[in-house]
Image (cartoon, rainbow, N blue to C red):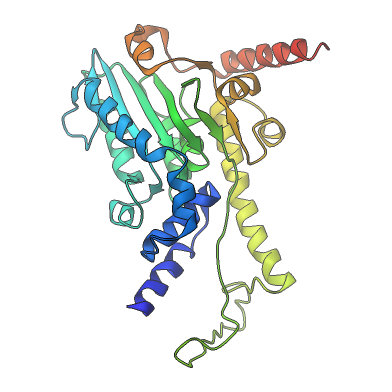
Length: 315
């Protein structure tokens, strides 16, 4: 059993994540069933368990089930597609965490909503710390390509991988207590440096022409190789956010939290979101008012935000 659990954690650490760091620690702890780990108490203290329950109730209350989807609803022509909890590429991986989202199921719901003659607008109801990087680039392109007006409503956290996806919507509306950000990529790994409890020691030998196949994080060369990998993924992350928000990549790097989370008012001021509101008010809006903005319109919005920021600073 111990070897199986070790293999499970190794699998979790085998790929880069776009997620809030404490949540990655929690996923590993849950995978090991280390329920007394302090990290689980820290995660529970952020209120996400209560928010998740409330969000699921909200999804059920905003309309009837959208036929063919996993858990999306429809009301007055607006489809509500939930993006809740840690994000994994496939449903089979969700069991490694508590109450996560399968990216493939989420995208399937979006495609069904986009194709439905009964749907005129799509709302992404979001409260997620982020998740696995795999598949996010393609999913982002898929969201940008949706034919229906698409809005993100952030009810709790929209962090890292979740923001990567939700920044592709035509508009981002935030609850006044919500936060967005954590733009960046993390790699988690360990290296055995002593014999294990069974008296055995693990060795890894890679082929001569593949020195970076198993980079050693205890060496400068190994750390540099790992850093290059996650920085390359971060470049794709930032490019997608820049495209989705119609701003320059340099602005994403400098103004969009630098890896931190921004509360709603600061996020709107920075251009990471468009406005503060409530889910009920958003659902009552005329769907014709919310449409995918053209690049020129988004650029004008960005310029207006920048003017307001400069005015607030007295420049």
